[in-house]
Amino acid sequence: MADQTSFPRVFALWAAGLGAAAQYGKMSVIFDLLPKIYPQAGASLGFLVSMVGGVGILLGVVAGLVVARIRYRRALLFALWLGAAVSAFQAVLPDFGWMLASRVVEGLSHLAIVVAAPTLIAQLSTVKDRGFTLTLWGTFFGVAFAILTLIGRPLALTWGVPALFAVHALYMAGCALVLSGSLRSLPDEGPQSPFSLPQILRDHLAIYRSPFLSAPAAGWLFYTFSFVSILTVLPPYLSEAWRAVTMAAMPLTSIAVSMTIGVALLRRLPAVSVVQTGFALSALSMLWLWLAPGTPLACLALAAAMGLIQGASFTAVAQLNSGPAAQAQANGAVAQMGNLGNSLGTPVMAFGLASFGGAALPLLAGGAFVMGLVAHLLLGAARRRSRRVPV
Image (cartoon, rainbow, N blue to C red):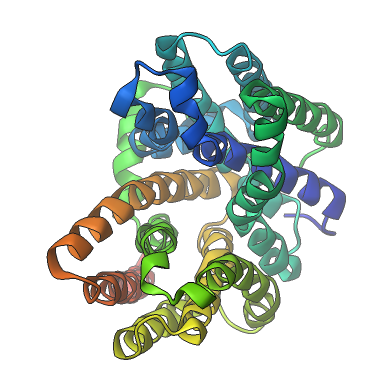
């Protein structure tokens, strides 16, 4: 644990996280441009967007275990250079099969970054500053998507899709160069158990059996299930006069609340309590939307409540698990459950809306928030029982 927070290195790691989020989102913001590049791909184009998430579902926990064993600085730098190489390769617009294969490799790079970076941030932060630094980390996805929308897409429209990939490659390489120097001196990471496939499998089971390691991931599953799907399916249910303003304001509200009210609460309350508060308020906001469909203020209240979940979930990783190895395992589980929630949320929500109409949105999302709260309550009870067991 650091005696003094290294804010320059924390911000550099957060910047690397923006690059990792761009690995996920760069295909999303130019998705409508891809049919011109790969006209024969048809519906398979969707895999260019989803493949990174699919890798995360399959290998999220494994990534946490592997990164812990090969050390965080080494894993992070390798992932950044690999990400830069993949984006440079994509800039030549290879055949569709090769582009799809590159997204698999990019998924591996993405996983290593989102496991190693928050683990390093926790190491480089004092206890009193972790609420801020890990909440900052929790904004990386929303900030990156905003930048891609405001800058990345116009760049692709003006200079072509290869320009976006080339700029991303340069950005990842720049992050690698900066961090290769700034991360030379790190706190002691402690001994690691031998690396083997049987040990990886045993550790995988142990993570989800532990109410300490699995708790942040359990809540993150229900958060990601709701967050992405709500932003995707909500617009048609809003008044056209308020639709654009509300949808633009929701992610910004979420980030603003997490960095202000969320950080303030984390200085006074355990992170899990803040997450539980966020889930409870999110469920109440969905009740508001059910009673008053399409109300912009209810949408902003929902975004504010979800902002409490966002940053506190990463802070909970560090509070519930001491030592970088355990935190890397917990972050791997968060990555796995986050990708699963992202992948399931929109299809399930779209099916519910098609089958049952607009009432399905508050019921499904509200139910997910309640389940997230219940999951944390049950795992909290399990942690209290484990502490009472005689050693």
